[in-house]
Length: 161
Image (cartoon, rainbow, N blue to C red):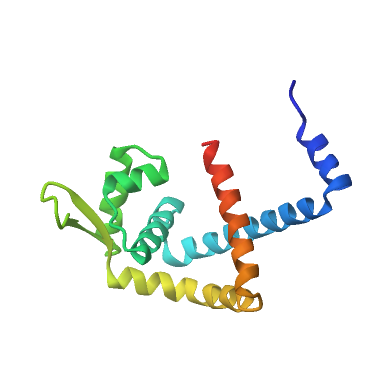
């Protein structure tokens, strides 16, 4: 038996208004992130896949993780041929470099250039500063709960992919 989305939301409105409020906040955040990303794409003269690749490289770099072309393809869910074209375009624009893997001479890794990192943070820095200012208003315990909630949502969304 299929349950309509409307009936699920109506049930939560009646019994768990906090769930509805949280989901409305997530939707508003998603909309704000879409607008921010759209503005950054225009300012940096990139398409969505280009910007998503830079974001992925920055995040993985901060974690100390290396990124292969295959990792980019898997993250974006695009073919290896499309990934090659994307990486060629970003390399030609000076945003990334392909380098030999440090321990596997046959493999390649993709790394950001200092120019790209600086340009990304020039466009994203004000947003990041504003977001950190919001987070600073909460205790570490509250932020841990918020992070668990957001991580759970991310896992739930990714599980259905």
